[in-house]
Image 1: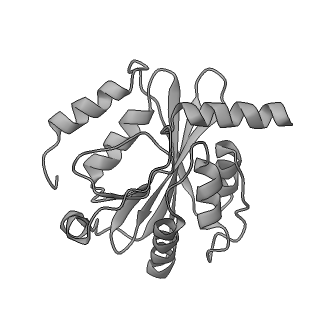
Image 2 (image 1 turned 45 degrees about the vertical axis):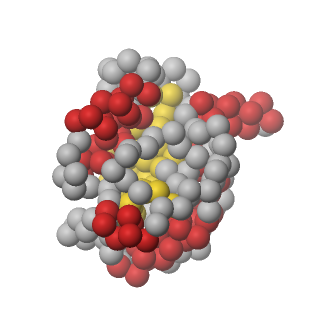
Length: 205
């Protein structure tokens, strides 16, 4: 039991930031970055899975409602165009979603994407909970995400867990979930991807 917990925490920590400093972008930056997708409201769970051990390595949550934001708890992904408030990134366009996936999917990891459509009210509630949660400590990606979802209308079956795959399995049981798995043969040095993304992107695209 304890060895499994240690293994999951260690793998998750390998993709997480070293600390959980409070980051709080100013209102002007958040307003300027606001992106509305025009798509039906949805919640999308991203689970990063090791290709070597099949263990869950990281959890992220895309919230698409009155605006689209990415909750990337204790994650190491970032982008200079996206203002952040304690692990919540604003201005998440389609290109930024693709960047997020590309950063995590590589020769040693694959990404599972699970999407469920929700009401505008539910999307707003999940967003408010993510914003209120605060900076997430290292290796608590699934713990924080499951806390945010638990008890939300339509997500009552979600229980708190420290394990990315356990959260993914719970999410898979929600009605109407669609799933895809993204693989990539990029080299394991994903930090170089951040430099490439920052260079290639154009504002508001």
